[in-house]
Length: 367
Image (cartoon, rainbow, N blue to C red; front, side, top):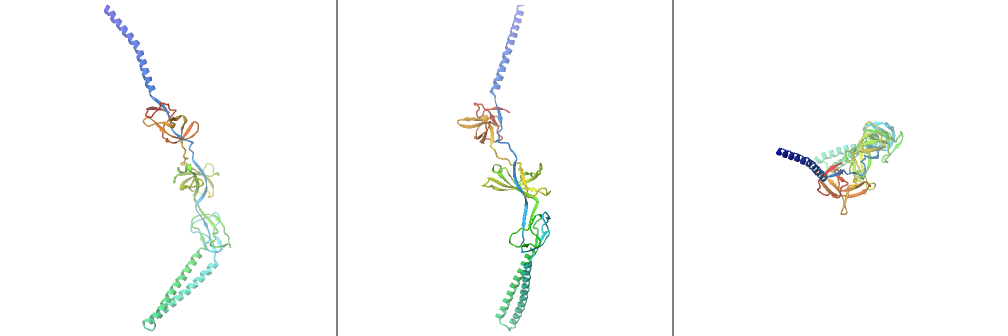
């Protein structure tokens, strides 16, 4: 009986002890968990961004034909007839106009007569030289006389060749009385009429011919955009009168050097105009989407750390460790500050870092 009561008392005492110990153990575990949680350094990270939003580069220029020529006369004469007018489409070699060239025709006739005389003189000289060589064989003539006849025959041959060359030259020049198209295109100007005197060598324009199936557009790209403009880049061309319509263009070449006066890069674009909807000489706007201005990166002002008189920012690497970087500051925009050197757009920067943050600390990132 006594032992039974003792065992019961011990069991009740053990239960009371365990009942009182469990809350203390649970409390200790909670404190330990809170301590571990507080030991983890949590930081909020942001990415550096350009100083201003990136917008497509938009520039103005004038549409011009890829091929354009001013057609003038190669010979002096009077306009007999013109065959094409303003706006006509022509093909390469097509006859545009004809000139009357009376003075050149007289020169050609005189040159042909001179050629006939030279040919007759050559034939006579050849016959004479042959007969004197026969006499020389029969010893009926002196060798000196035979040599003179041979030399005269050579002179007559040269004179005949010179006369023939002159006739060929005048015939070729006479061919320029027919003014033809050097390439296929459209007549954009006509500046001659029947009976008009046209003088060679004055550079007076008779026709202007342009190939408008391809157009080119010259624009001047500002220095801050120049490095992002590459040959082959696609662009969009818009005209003020064609609202909401865009035409595809492509960068074909650049000057390769900045203009010292304007600090711009001369750039040429080409546009397919086989549809004929664009007119050469039109004002146009071009957007080069891939060309972006080079702006410095910015970070929040509270991301800066100043230690020993130097500006730093705390970054988090791929292994979640802190790396302090020295940076060069630019303009201060209040909430943000330009970073000229020391950061890249892919870096993760700690916002509002604690003073205790140092190199190598393991952190947990939050957004």
